[in-house]
Length: 182
Image (cartoon, rainbow, N blue to C red; front, side, top):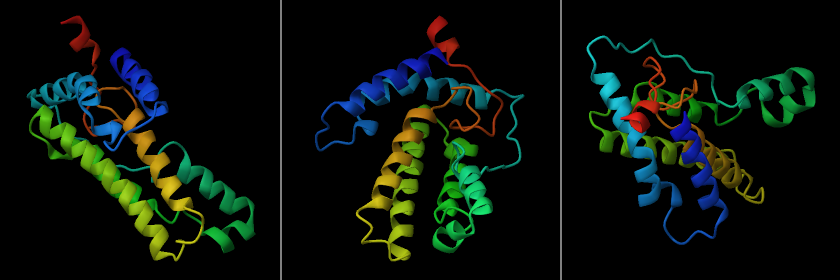
């Protein structure tokens, strides 16, 4: 968790700084910071007594689906205008499927790449959902939502973070403290 906290602090600093053409979430610094978590997770998964739990999803993490549902229950006009569930919730479930089993990765490098691919797919799916709904003229709302979700999962979904929405959450919790101590 300490390493994940450090990762978030550095990543936040990078996200606030001006960003060039390269996506900061896929850059060499982030790969270096995230590598110990992927190494620990892959070693954890490789141990003989680890089993994958049955798949579960909360829809869109961070309370997004829950709050959306509460708004729909409370305000009938909300449902008429925006539906009873987030229109991109299927994107989140697909994303959760990749996060659940760590993208079926076999090694730390593949784990990093699979997580990045899942996060980029989430972003693309949310944007496509907006386009499918004819929301292309909403001032970029779906683009902003997708980008916010992407940044949130990149910052908060690292492996071995102890969070229930972490990369590899279908496996028992691992700790990146081992990588700091050893």
